Length: 112
Image 1 (cartoon, rainbow, N blue to C red):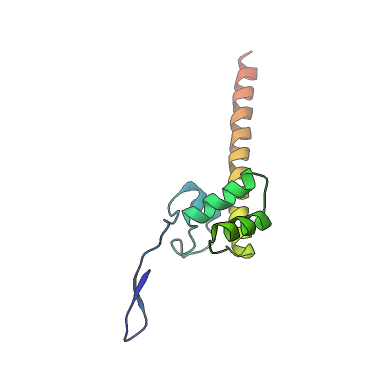
Image 2 (image 1 turned 90 degrees about the vertical axis):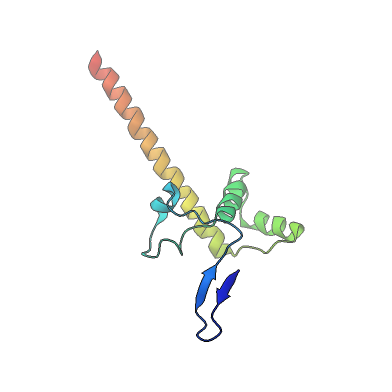
């Protein structure tokens, strides 16, 4: 919902039904714009994409789910952008885990 000035058509305030993931680790990883707040992913969109991916499903399954639940369907472009953010987050976590394991193994190896 947004409040718009009747004289100049500028938006005075906006309220979303789902919070945006601003200042979260995922948002910092995927931040590609100066406009951090406006490009922050919505929590509900990110969760539905993560859910579909965790089930091994893709966009067509999301379309069917939304149709059966009588929900507005997310565009494939939006789905793919959220999918890229989720996968990028997994890659960052994976690389950090590998670095931590290598550090621990190297430390144990040097002790001996």
